Image (cartoon, rainbow, N blue to C red):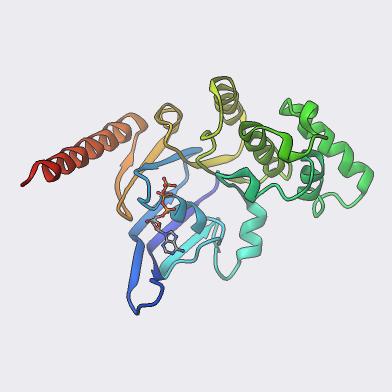
Length: 245
Ligand SMILES: Nc1ncnc2c1ncn2[C@@H]1O[C@H](COP(=O)(O)OP(=O)(O)OP(=O)(O)O)[C@@H](O)[C@H]1O
C-alpha cells in the first residue's frame, strides 16, 4: 500500500482586497496507509482543500505533504502520475465531447499507439458498464452518468491512489450501490470525502474535519458518531442563538 504523510500542514489564502489571510486548514498531521480512507465534515469545513493537497491542486502554506516519499509541491508531476483525482462536478473534469474520447485522452500518455488506446478505452468502458453511453455527448448524459464516466476516465490509467471528492452526490440509489461495489472491488488506495455516511461506514479509517482541523481520526462507526454529535451541538447552539432576545 502507499504511504501518504501530512506533516504540520496549514493552508491559508489571502482575502480579496485586504491584507488578512483566511485559514482553510491548520495543524494537520497524519500518516495514511490504510486501503480505504474517508473524510467527513460539514460544508466548508475543509474536506476538499485536504483532498486537493494530495495531488498538488492546493499547496500547503506551512508543512509538507508527501505521497510515497515524493513532495506534492516539488515533485508534483510524479505525484500526479500516481494519484488520480475525481472531482465533485464531472463537467470540470470531462473535457472531451464524448466519454470514449475522454477515456482515450486519459490514456494518451500511457498508451502511445492509437489503435491500442482505442481498444483499451473500449475495454475500460465495458468493465464499468458504460459502453452504451460512450459515444453520446456528455451534455446529453445525466449528472450521475457523467460522474461514473469521470471515475472511469481516471481509473483508465490505473493510478495507485484514487482521490474522490464527494463522488456520490449526483447518483441515484442504483448507481450509488454500483459505486460502492466498484470502490469495494478496486485495488487502489482510496481517499474519499463524502456526505453519504453509509459510504463513509465502508471505510477502514475516517477523518472528521471541523473548521479546518482534524477533530477525529479513527474507525468509521466512531467517526460517524463524532460527526453526528458535532452537528447536534451546532444545531443546538444555532437554536439557542435564534431564541436569544
Ligand atoms: N481559494 C479560496 N479562497 C478563499 N476561500 C476558499 C478558497 N477555497 C476554499 N475556500 C473556503 O475554505 C473553506 C473550506 O472549503 P472546502 O471546499 O475545503 O470545504 P468542504 O469541506 O469541501 O465543503 P463542502 O462540503 O461544501 O464541499 C470554505 O469556507 C471555502 O469557502
